[in-house]
Length: 220
Image (cartoon, rainbow, N blue to C red; front, side, top):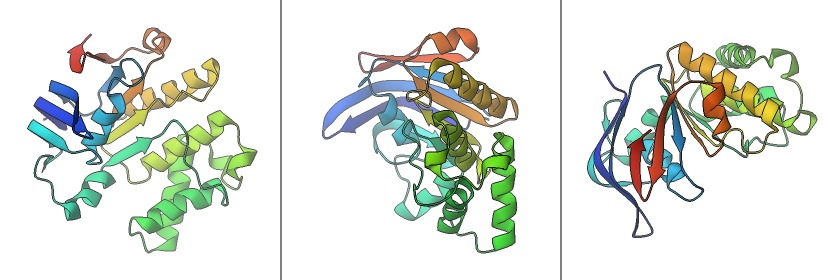
């Protein structure tokens, strides 16, 4: 069963149509590239999946949630099942990698300190950052910071990861390592949708390709 199903969806930003007639599905464990020019609507589509941007019309389902009628109080439960990886890291600069992740768990209602620590350790180990958990963000390279961000996205063991230009601020070699990491996550059964305008990544790692062009989504 698909975890995302969009049918004839229209998305507006500030009353302007950003995307129209969008139809696609995503299944568990799929790796999907979302390509298109800067400003084409990739981020808007991703934000609609975690209810940051409303779906104007059509049918849109993410997990068991109808994105046309989802209630405000349901959104945190939807978002617990989605890990988000941003281009600009968005790490808290005043605390260590470990404390960044612990903060997220506290904010999402995890009370037990030992359980939180175990979960943080497990997420950091998955991205090869267990031995640098004590470091502050400024002590980490861009690639290491992005690994911490991926660990943060994995904390709640999500069914879906949305990665918005995750290699945008990284050198090419580090970018490839990050995409390899995301591919490994997909191989483990977590669907990954990655927005990028770096088409060389598509040659390096196989994946399904969806292209946004002229406000429409086209399977490449």
